[in-house]
Length: 293
Ligand code: 3HC
Image (cartoon, rainbow, N blue to C red; front, side):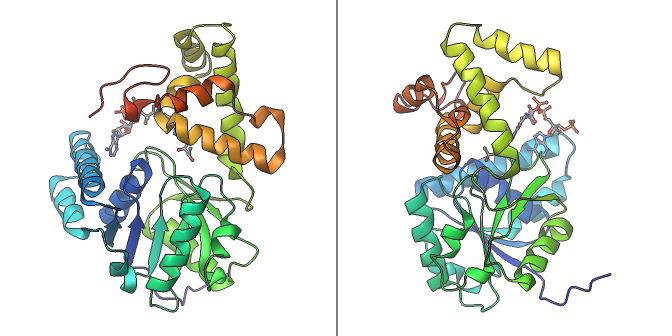
């Protein structure tokens, strides 16, 4: 059996506290890690903090954690709008919107800020080449993809993605952290747009949008077909709303850019809905209507 000799990861920094970042920060804090969360301004930070507190409350109500565990998780969380506070972090997990330029710039900034020589840099990107983010740093060997699934506190899968440059020690350390410290199930993917899950999931979601767009069936019938007929927890249009139609679109665009396959081409209706601000659950309207909390 291989012995892990690299230092444990204890101080984690999560960049971005939206849907994914808040879930990632929550599970880190629930596993006893010193978790620092960055957002661009106080308003975004407060919204992220409220999302985590709400989820922890629901976790207690559903019997997934005890009240003392919830209190301990809250104590393990700190929030900042100053990225230089990440200087002492062992690991930064980036979970900002899927905008290539934004992520690339952030990795260059983190490289300048994080002082520990063995610090690791991970991206929760679902579609941008991890190698491109690694190349923005002076330490590409320390960069990996670490892709979580929404809702993060509920779904225990993580896709781990090494790049052509990831160092063996960094790889062993992040894998050990994800499996043992976070207690997640790991699958490994090559650094290709969409990795394993989105490469399979996105064409399915796009096919449902095309089916709806062409008038073939009602949204509710498409969704019920897959829930009741195939045992899926939710139908494809409800799932696209849950993921966010903007995120679904940007992942489809990345897949299409990478592979040029028609099955990845975003249908016009999806583009128009995003342009109209109909982003799904988070905006209150997508294929269905929602109450925004
Ligand atoms: N903390 C911990 N556990 C929680 C929780 C919380 N805050 N909230 C709910 N749970 C638990 C519940 O206790 C329950 O567990 P149980 O089955 O052991 O009782 C389970 O989560 C389900 O919760 P609910 O009963 O409240 O909710 P539903 O049964 O309606 O399920 C759902 C909601 C989990 C969203 C389910 O519909 C589902 O799994 N949908 C599919 C989601 C999916 O496919 N996500 C992946 C998207 S792809 C992605 O993220 C990648 C990106 O790159 C695009």
